[in-house]
Image (cartoon, rainbow, N blue to C red; front, side):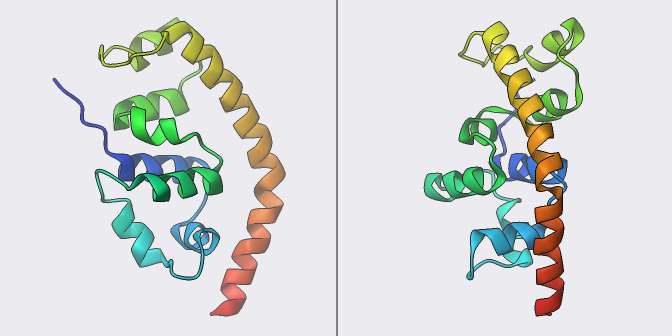
Length: 136
């Protein structure tokens, strides 16, 4: 069974994993963004490269994460520890053109860095959400 890559859904998955609301992402992307536009964006299968790069910068997630993972892989990579079972679950589609072991090590390091960053950015995010609420 072929799994299609859905970039919008990947954006949504990573955004949710980071605990970032659509409103907060819209705020970070700039003036011409709002929650509705983020919602529509997350329904798009393909997102234009410049916009994907901008989202990547805001969420601090590599562009490749949005481009390379089908939904199931993204979920596996986020939710599993990188034991042998995760290896077989996450990389069993045969469409991946990088060395899986190296990628797992890299993803593991990124995951650790991500958790550290999430802890550090929690207060900053609360500040942004408070400012968002004050604007309304």
